[in-house]
Image (cartoon, rainbow, N blue to C red; front, side):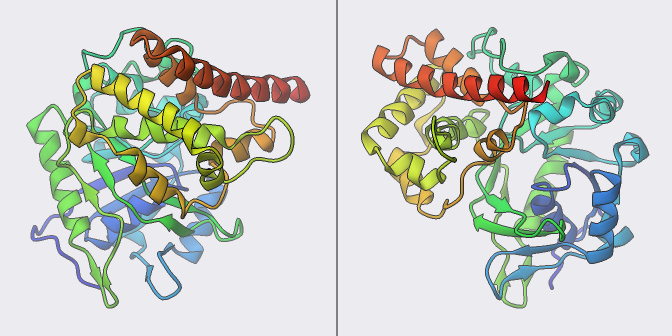
Length: 356
């Protein structure tokens, strides 16, 4: 393994979320920085014992160092934000409502720059884009006030394009990467925060193993609109894995079973984003997304969670529907998107009634 940091002193990075968060954590730690991953105590104990392994293919596996010179594990209550230079949030938005995570967010407040790789953009980031309607997040979040302690200028967001799963629940530190695309971060507002992000992304992206360059780069060359490129993908694919009858379908099938409908949703959201000022270079063409879905042979985590009885999920569907309504998208696309959102809502109502 080759460590590429040219600086003698590593950065100290806090990654909140011990599932998907292991993907960026592994790259950053392998590049020579100190990373603490926050998760449940039982989960962390197993990961600390077994180690972390990111499987890109059968023979391409990244095993970052563990302990003080690599990845260490902690629970939210064990974290002192003063010990870190940057926080990365890799959780599902409803998880932020739990007492331990919401308390950690309030303790981080303006002490640390926060780089989110969540599908659901935290409200402080949305405030950094004045052209977005101020009512965009209404009814889309479990509790927006949880995030109020983080100043917008201290938060950025990535378009979380890579896809990874835990193939074996008994080995929580092992991830299988099913789509090795890149994290593309919008720049921070403050130069000193951007300098930290730029250094760790540069070091991580230069990482090489004996078998070659390690996939899934961390990039920070995009515009403030770059993370929004994920929105058409999420509502065209992830949110449409649900079915009224029967189990959920894969993202690939959700998109490809009726390409005309998929195109209509995708391009309507793209038009709405362009109307807010998003440049075409920050967005992804529909054909490129369709090509990427050929590797997405599992249902989305949202669909699997609802199928398993989840009573709260990320509501990116509401966020996008609000945007489409504000931008007066064509009625047919609005009708399709409203039906997608209604199915998510019905699934949640069913699960909440069953949980009583």
